Image (tube, rainbow, N blue to C red; front, side, top):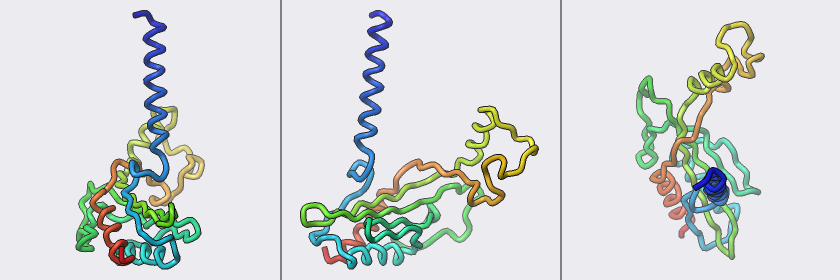
Length: 182
């Protein structure tokens, strides 16, 4: 097999893999756990979804009733939603958190509730090392603002989504279904 044929085949494989990745983006069962409620989206259903997150001990970060979107404030990855317990003292290496997202959409006279609980890992140190490796410097010759960062740790922390917590997604959706009577 000559070089041109191998290059053409490998390019085709790469393009196929990229197109599959793009096809699963957005609201789909590949990215979210989904439940269908027999009623159309309404302010009451949105309120049920919000009340569910609050009842499970989560705070709301983003609330968009017109778009049907709710996002929680990041919460400890060790929090058990079923018992609503958080660890008393997190360990020094607990660098994980979770963020819950809910999307309510009308589809054919019913409402689909999409839920994703993303597990995020703190990768700030790795990010800084890569930045230095790519031509940056760790010498204190600039202020944090000149580096594009900030002096606060909250704004300076880098989080990467590493997995989904499907058990937490099912817990949230089951509670919404119970509240909605579906």
